Image 1 (tube, one colour):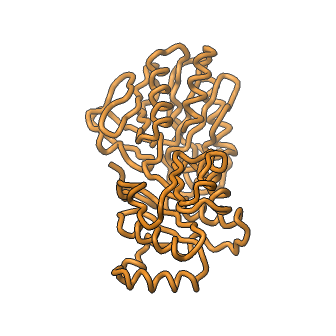
Image 2 (cartoon, rainbow, N blue to C red):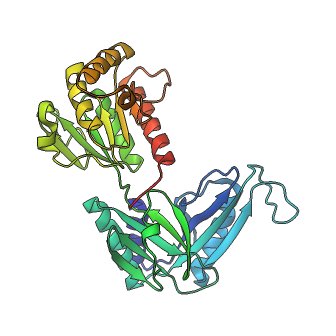
Length: 346
């Protein structure tokens, strides 16, 4: 989402009208799901994708017209053979795309983009909320913070609690239908260990819009040059992680344990298991995990604690990975899977 709002501000500075195309609803088999976005100007697509192929082409053509006319539109694309509306696609589903006109020179829209970018820079929860209403020239959209409205234009929904969710959501209120998209992921990935795998993993997670904090006890490894995508790098003691991370991991957070040995693994796992973290994963062989498991049981954790769905040991999806880069891909894939299945919010 940082890319989206950065481009909006840049285009507005250049007095260029934009159209934000969003998948408001989808059903059946579709290339992209609810919340997927694409930015279009009068010449075509400039960023993002709603899935490619014929539907995206048609949405781009529609967006180019809207960039000139200033009238937003709602379009449904049928991705299966049909008597009416057949566009020659055979995916099997349908998508409804809302194309929101964003007029250059609009100070309120500029303020909305600025509020979103500020939320990204501060790493605080925020949501882009747009009223899905075709055929109108006036936009109704804005940025919600965790407890307040950060910037708004047009009509504002009276109910906002249901719009603050971890995943994109279409919600109906007395004021109409609203699409909510998280600007920032509300969960943080805490990476314990700063070795080879961590250095391969952090750039991947940054590209995937995960917010990351790295923890290790080796000061020489805890350098920004190694982890430019990290929000924070903490040097601390594994025997007392809570002294460096005083607040417990939340139910939206992830613990990725990549330390250099079983002793440090054990200490990081104890810290994570005592928290409500949504995901806990630890690297290593099954033999090592069996040994650490016995230590965890001796420390007072139950079989149920260690067999819970949130606990992944060994970490990552099994793709036969061997190199640090391959292991990083397997971990990132598992985090994506967990995030996409996670429900809830504030």
